[in-house]
Amino acid sequence: MPEEKNQYLHEVVITAIIYKDDRYLITRRSPGKKRFPGMWTVPGGKLETDDYTSFPKETKDYWYNVLERTLRREVREEAGIEITDIEYVTSLATIHADGSPSLVISCMAAYASGEVKLQPEECDEHAWVTLEEAKQHQLIDGIYDELLIASQRRNGLKGEWKRME
Image 1 (cartoon, rainbow, N blue to C red):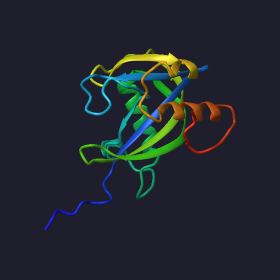
Image 2: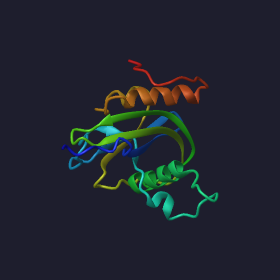
Image 3: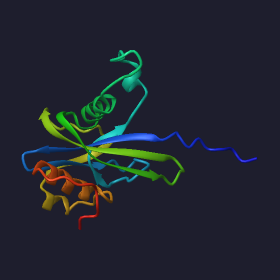
C-alpha cells in the first residue's frame, strides 16, 4: 500500500517587498541555491518552529506576530537590514519539483535602518530599483506583479494579486 501524504504539512515562507523612497530592494539568489538559482527576488525565508517556541506565549495557548518576527529575522540574516511597518500583500502556493508543497506569504515593509550586507550562501547581489528598473532583472515569475501591488498599496489602492503586464 503506498504511503499516504500528510495534506496538512507545508513549508511556510514569508517574503518582504522592502521599500525606501521610490525604490525596492531586490536580491539575486546565489548560484548554489536549489530553487531559482541566479534569479532575482525579494528577501525572505522559511518559518522555523524556533521562530515561536523559543519565545514566551502571549496568551495561555498562543504565540502572536510569529510571521512578522520571522520576516524581521530573515531580512536581518539575509540582507543585514531592519524593517518596519509590515503589511500583507498576497499569498501563493506551489509544489516544487521535489514534491515539497510551499505556502508563501508576501508582505511589504518599510526600510528602517542598516546597510545591505548579503548572506553569500543566500544571495550574491542586490539592487535598490524603481519599478521600471526592476524589469531589467531576471525576476522569479510573479515578483514584478507583487512589486506593482506594493506600489499601488503605497498609493492607497487596494486589490488582490493578478497578472499586471
